[in-house]
Image (cartoon, rainbow, N blue to C red):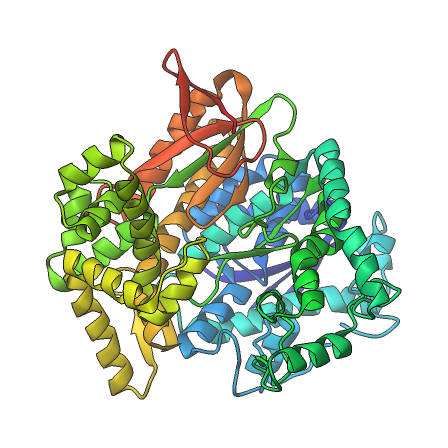
Length: 602
């Protein structure tokens, strides 16, 4: 059976519409290309999606366009993904760059990698793609041809559409000989995430207005003061030359520098400068950034974050806005609300990366005290706290439940240790890490805490040693193949290597959960029919669910997420808890009444 490359031309993407109206579809198989107008494109796609192998560049976009035209296409697309009949040339290239260690910088080109079809044509075919640029380029003009039969189109418009499918097919022919182990899993996750982007997440206009007002109250007076000192220009932009000069003076002529060799103007540098003007600027920098970059996005009735299915560790990232790294400023998350008649279901895994670390340790060394604690049902932060307090786990639990101050402080320290140290950081770096939690400790204290942690989980010494040996043997960085998934990553250093194995395992399980939850929501008759996923935050999925049965649906989300992750962590108990919310809150927890979940609020 042949692989067939397809490409769609559409109306332009607009805010809130990532699956715009279809104009035409082109296809390529072997040396044959063909162009289909609107009606013929839908008919041809229906034939293909039944049982053919389909190739595309950023294929999730084209598939969503088709599904937006015909509701009945959605279950067929999920079926094609389940049967491994979808190939995305863009995602394949991302995996290739990660395997080479070039995900941030490609030394062959002297720049960060690019994943456009144009870039892949240059890389694989050593050709310059036709028709992408210039005043007469058709790339963004196909709406002009809507409802006009293709035989009446200008030759340039027909040729551009056909070439996109042809170029994609030719790139695919060179890619297919190297099918990376997790390739099909990445394709599926990208589809689930793209549907999430297309649906979007709604905002509360009044909450956004209130946030904007509070930010202006925080920022405006300070900015006016700084204008008089020439720190801020009359236009409202920062006067970087003046700021850098003050930083240099404040640090005695030896200021902190950026990686590119400029004087750093980071908020932390300004805050620690000892200069009142720079400290004042630092105090409002975060709020000013929110006003300038975040609030304008929130003012849209629906926000459509974009997801990148692959970074070097195998995790995801997001942008416009970065939904996975919300500002700490109170009131930002709360601007996101479910659509009328719905609650949010927020379901996240318990200590997901620590569970993955325990599985990695167990697989690598055949034993793990961390795994034993999790298998025994112990709360891992209290398990670590017991080591800090030099008492039994049972005593740590008793003291913590009784509200003992030392036990509470020990658990907070334990949380920092459990989340910070697995990445192989030094005691000195841990001091800075703790500061991010609002905790000040000395380097000597950090060293003592680290030793207590390693004594509690001695197998981690072996883990660090193994990663260190790999680095030393291969000149400071090494090529890592994940033993569980086969995921390939090049250029891995010590801290990257320590983080990689458990971070990737968590990401692999969570991305599979995204796909399974999406399928249960979008396919008619699915267990979560009526729900829609709206956000993914590494180990947490947020959905909209009808109020009347949100409690029952939340339990189904838990079951899907646990069952999916358990395949990746076969020896570690997996837990996931769902909470209901009337808007997005940080730290939401399950609350029940008469045995059913009800919305949590602060």
